[in-house]
Image 1 (cartoon, rainbow, N blue to C red):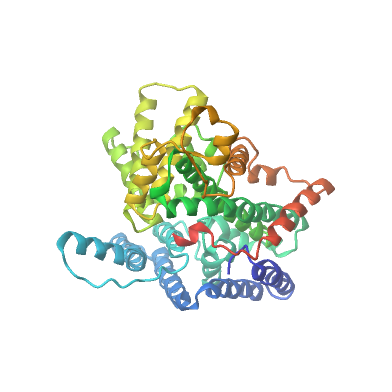
Image 2: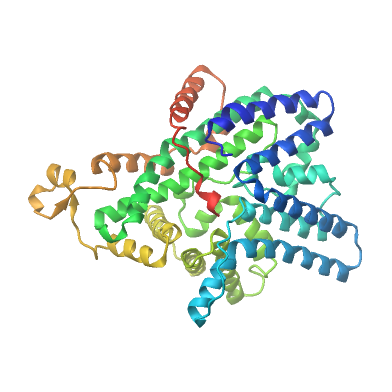
Length: 480
């Protein structure tokens, strides 16, 4: 089940909400059990075959985490923690990286090992990155002996289960126990619906529009010229942002209906003035995980400059491979790692760029790196990048040629990526303005006040979005 569907908006969410608060008046354990079972139903709706895997993983991690919290022998605790981490990484590795590894072994050594064509279990990347911190914190004595129901609800709570935000146990466990959260909170309902509506419009009103153009460009990279390639790359740059931030907004909004506050995942990343600033704003819960559970344990910046830079490269390599089993994702991660190292060296040298130039360089680097993130292969990525620097010609779309550039006498062609280049360029400019200059959805949420203008604004967004729901599309991060 996906957020941008009739089933979720008009059936699942209202029913779960009504029954949950009705049961809260009877027995809180019963209401949490209902929410846990509803979350499992939400997960299983997509593909029930992997529901047993989720439950197995949940059970094993709870047992290991509980024992880690009780043990006193440090050597035994380290062994058990290692076993738990290897268990999680092995599950993720088998389903996500087995075929990629075998394909590369076959290519390098000429072997003929069997490709299993495994289907990636939904959300396995996300819930793996929630379970490992729980084990590490249990080892450190930072968990509080949560019962199985609370632990299960922490991992499966449906708003964040599929594509984040990546929550940690201390983000939500206490909230599920708070007696005040058992009561209907009308302010949370209003705010939750507001942020959910914004997220829904981001997805179906903005991201899905750019998806058509990005898909058209990346499916025919050999036909792209200079203008086409930039339209293609920028379309994906905005599609990805509005798609993923839209999901996060909808997750935060849906959780607020149940009085649960999820962590912020985006803070206007395309306003960043450096690559470090970008990663403080983009997928913030992933950055938090990578910092706290990989970068710092590797030594962080405590072991000298060289070690610091190696740690940064390792973190971004892991970030790349976490996003997808492919060389394009690895290259994307390495690009960001190298850029982060350069950024640190630049800052240590005391250099400083004008803000506008710093923003321009950061945005263009991110846009170019997204080409590898989106392209189905390294070859396609290179084709798109070559076109972006003019190596595949400078032909102009016919409406641009006819209206503006007749005097240049350049070759022109029918613009096939979208109906009209002029229309597409205008929408790209609007999306750019929203992402770079407008208040983001979290700022709007924090300033939210229920009134008639806000109600009308939300109604327009939701009505338009609902009218587009017949064109159901997955969220991009479902693939990761």
